[in-house]
Image 1 (tube, rainbow, N blue to C red):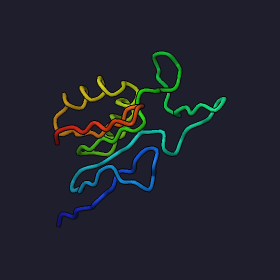
Image 2: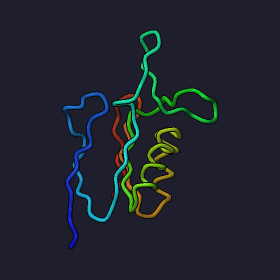
Image 3: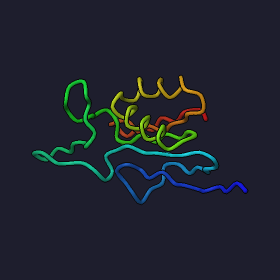
Length: 115
């Protein structure tokens, strides 16, 4: 018997707000972002996810949620897309079958994939 689970994706800066509601059935959702894990330096907020290319915190997204068949892939893609940034990250998701995403860029703009 298949079960369906309804999930809300929180706004990355206003946790009381839900940005999207989705139904999960035989799929997984993972989110990487700055909502819970971050650190402050001289009044500036930094993400806990570091860009391996330059060694500094990734700073072009606030949140990335990825929906796909398995949780390991969803988690890996959410982190990779967060580091790549909105444009390259979105392109990566679109090139993979069965992958959908919701990105929130540093300015707060939400970008939904078609699925």
